[in-house]
Image: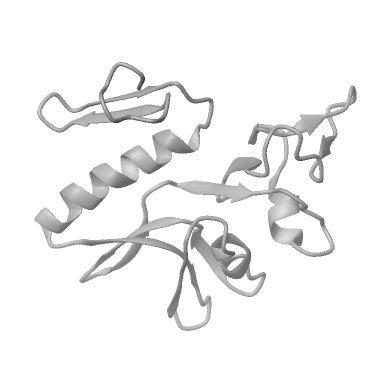
Length: 162
């Protein structure tokens, strides 16, 4: 923030493990909460012998095998894991234990700029009443224009797995 020497951003994300608090200032991007909690999990999980992963994951319904997809934010993890023939475990943050893989978030946080049903039907159909859409432009009938990037290219939608 501007009161801290050497800082060039108005955004501040601060975590205190001592008081178990996180403070996020100067941003309207909900992803900071998600990434802040992932930072906490990256600290806590290894202390329990659990590996935290920045990945998406899905599972074969026939044999239970799990596929993990690794990549930076916005590189296609959500798209790759949204396979209609496999059960989605989650699209971004997971933990790997001796017993298997589990999702930290309990839902998906998909980038939706340029989203079209023809290209990503599982993601498009998951966005329904109750989903949280951020940084997107809607018309008077509340129809989202997924190609409108006047706010940012980082349009996102948070929706449950089921």
